[in-house]
Length: 481
Image (cartoon, rainbow, N blue to C red; front, side):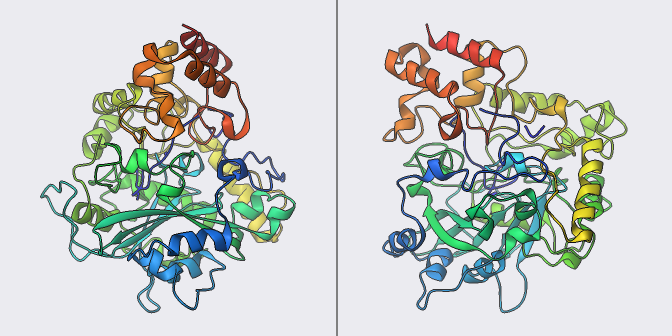
């Protein structure tokens, strides 16, 4: 069962909460099956699309590389992920940009990410290495930098760019369709190299455009409210960068994740526009991403993942880690950090173990993927995102902590997106979980309806978490008070 720059949740680019759902989110496809023509259509209903969205963006005259690139005249032809990378300034001539791959994320795309379907962070290289000096968020060492987040299975790309004209970070969501959207896309369309090319109907949204949707960037990248400075997110900011793929024997976790990736994709399959023969080289390096965050945004990070200490405690509790993650490991340090998320004070914390996956599921999906690629027929490809370890779902933040009452469930699963600190001008602010006792009857009844809803109105959104029937009943009982 499948069921969060960088900057990015765990990783970097983290987002969203508003509403639970099926543990089979986000795609909802079955082996060889199709998903809705546009599963997020209801979320973006009423917002401009295509050329209209770009016109609205360009009218703002931003000075960052994303806006300047997409608003150039003549307009760039963007029909693939590679085209988009070139358009927003991620390439210096023909040289590929810096990148890092993560096998777990606490971001907007958390339920799509594993070592066999990693999240790629592609970014302009920082001017200097990471620093031990803390950054209060006001120092930007690389004016005009840009970074991109992408994972297969999602028909969108996340971008963040620094605008040196106003010294601000601008976050963007770029949506695209494929030819398959006309009848419904299969897993083969979405989870193979096919998703990275032959794009149609490009739509671009800035964070201000989507702040009242489940794709809102601001509750993770501006957690102290709309008047505060935006920040990059990289919860695993320091070595050993537990969930990042890295071919370095000093970090066996990264080596193990890379091995899982290469069993499925080989050493020559390009991924997220990254040449396959570079993925196991030093060019793939979270240390350089750490430098970008340290030099240009807040450090240390809110609720930062203390990787070295956590890995040491996990290794002592379960000596077969990191290659074997069942039985799962334990870490007292991680437990303390995790409790802040349970208390609704932070976004979900990256998982304590290196691997978030079930070995038998990964083996099955790897065989299926290799067969589909070698045969040239993707029609029967299963959903390779369905590889999470069942007993890890609550620690991953996809389900509530066991034993919580109704109030506790609402706090853990909803408060990070529904509280009094975030933008109070949007409708989501009417449901302030920090003040349950003072909510109006109407606000509570609306929340109850959302807990029992389907589709885009479901709370919490299937993209971020899911509640059992019993947990929904407990939350509803609390709201009935």
